[in-house]
Image (cartoon, rainbow, N blue to C red; front, top):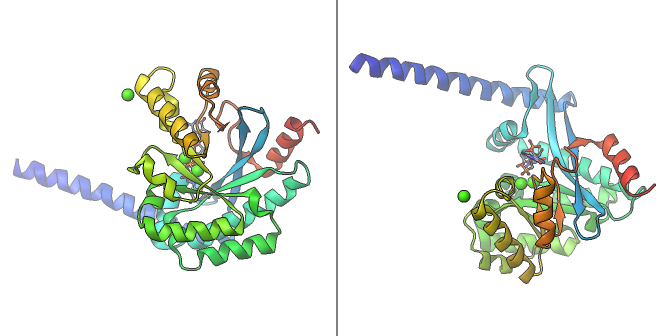
Length: 278
Ligand code: C2E
Ligand code: CA
Ligand code: CA
Ligand code: CA
């Protein structure tokens, strides 16, 4: 048993080593990748379920590495967060997203672009300054920019965050809470935050039609949000059954493969033209 344990440990540490090595390699690769222009944004359309109009898109970061191929944000964002590279990436995302929003404004005025903000990026002392400069430099209409913070990021250091969020609201940007329902926030606590919308996590949407627990949770989130005068966006909508359910419950907006997967900026421009009757 002793030697088995040892072999198990060796196997485990070999695996650990591989994970660590990939991590280190990706970390170096990311820095080179940024210089080589390997990072770019995709955009996923968001639709208003009452007016049946396109409202905008969520910007989702992509990395096509010459060395590693496509690397998903679920893998590289946490690494970028832990090594501090997220500051460079976050700036790129914010700037690029705003530039796209400015371009779409000429095609279909009023579209918004939603940008994911990571915890470390938000806690960076000059984050507010960065947002202000990007707005000024790109000339984006502040109300066209929506910043998404996850529930857990908002809830840790909640008191401090309220000040920062209020400062962002003063600039005129929209604020939303991402992955809602996965964290530990009490619904009641939400009223202290100056936010405009919450996004129901896609894990609740996935089994909406077959799992009565998930259906009850989604319904509760929608009615609670509405009583707090918040908009509700459902993410990960894939079927018309899910869409019917959400529309019946007066969910405000939705995004997901049912409408379209995330797409390159040029494709989204064509999409806008197609669906805004131009
Ligand atoms: P998220 O913010 O929850 O983004 C939604 C994810 O769901 C995206 O994955 C999107 O491609 C995927 N998705 C969209 N529609 C559907 C659907 O109908 N079904 C299913 N199963 N999935 C759908 P993606 O692009 O791989 O991004 C994963 C996560 O990486 C994001 O989750 C977000 O947390 C993070 N991320 C992506 N871009 C950025 C960024 O620019 N900055 C930061 N900080 N995080 C980012
Ligand atoms: Ca998001
Ligand atoms: Ca989400
Ligand atoms: Ca269940």
